[in-house]
Length: 233
Image 1 (cartoon, rainbow, N blue to C red):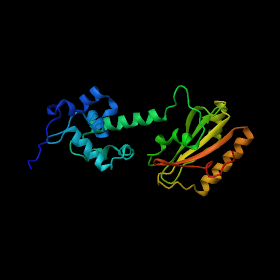
Image 2: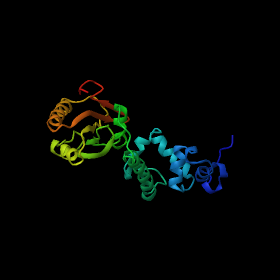
Image 3: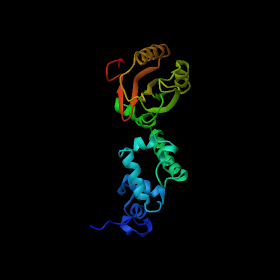
Image 4: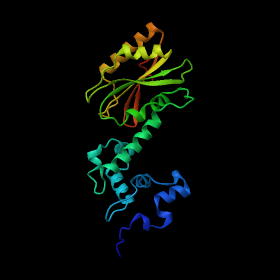
């Protein structure tokens, strides 16, 4: 069997070109690798942009969350992947993350732990360090805004209750949800997590601000204190 030579993107059939396919059939029609190839624009000697995209996705085990965790030096390990191309991929992934994180003009009503987790899952799931956030909700559980409270290292982060309730009071929010991530991937709450939650609930009662849940995020999974019966409805 004759080995097929790698050919330049410009020499492909129109139906095989990612850009042309995207234009003719819509952005939903192209694969993850083809979308990355569109961003790359060109490959290198003996390797098309699509070849390079497939190589990177293979290294990431087809997981875009893993790809989003790569830093610039990691991208530059691939032949034909210079800093400019790497920055395009990193920028596109960051925009996607921010789009997921940004509240819509008419925020959805949060009625389940899954909806609550989705508010910040994309922001927290891929981080290599811990961050602590809150989501402020209206009386009808509609999202007002999300706020970063603290950022830490691999071992943990500090949640300052003065900052948490300052945001809630300034926004006139009657309810809030606590969030933090576990970069280790272990969803089980620590004794410190449980103590922090209890203290937040007690402080909220004094200020008449309901703490509806505490969500721990690890990758694409989450743990809900409310679902586990650790927060009274």
